[in-house]
Length: 410
Image (spheres, rainbow, N blue to C red):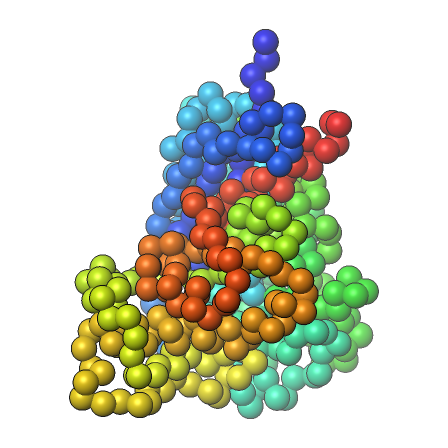
């Protein structure tokens, strides 16, 4: 009896790379099991002094990200890799990197484990990049989009490079997110493909017409030839052009999707669920323990140190300070409450009620590891709240590909 095909999910996050192997538990596409998973820290941050944008720049070394990816895949069971029948990919949104078509990577052949290594690529300018000031953003053309353009958005970064480093852009003829790049390299695509999720995160993309604001961009001298072609997230971008660490050549690879969407998809069991994603952060156990004991506080912390994309000038603050509210427990409780209240201000409970949402699903490693954040979510959202177990974007990316394959066969 032939082994049942499995699906590989990959998530290229801001700090780490994750991979998960999923198999259908039965003929029902909604039932699956995680067969194996792996995570590796990317450690890809580039020193600020190495960035042309100076201290405001946030860039990552693509070679280190791909190295972590190869290590992740190599750590998975070899026999299960041989049975991979589809690959789903997700990753950090908004960011942009550049490469030379046909020269973006090199495959090592002849060894026991063929893999690819980046060549002729730029650094990845991440979503955290702050090179585009408010004044610079105000000088850009108004987009036809449901989103305003913010620093860290791919198109804003390209505009900045066009003004400050025009020669740099002439070295490349393709651009995309880090996960678009990986899909293009795995499949040997002549042009990168991008999902509407990632395109919207770049700015200057109309989700209704599913098209770039090409005429607006051309009018400002924007290099529109760098913009990827648009495809449905999770649809097949192509097949692997080489054997990749035991994964067969010709394995279907899905168009890359956003990590937020993949994370939410992995833990939503019902259509009436609302996904709540908390960005991964380091929270010390002593702080959490102290805050668990400190049930309430009058201290108020607004945690937007970097501002928000829709309010870039509204920075962090601490108010209602008193001598009785300065303990570790008070400060940590106030910080966790501020994080959740900031999320609630962008998606209020009343709006969820209007949409008919009946349950909130909480996911993200910062949330799953922090009991205080969980308590504050339950305080802010007076709905049943469920916290996902072992859910992440890699699982979501694999699940979407798995369900598409099962639907096509049924």
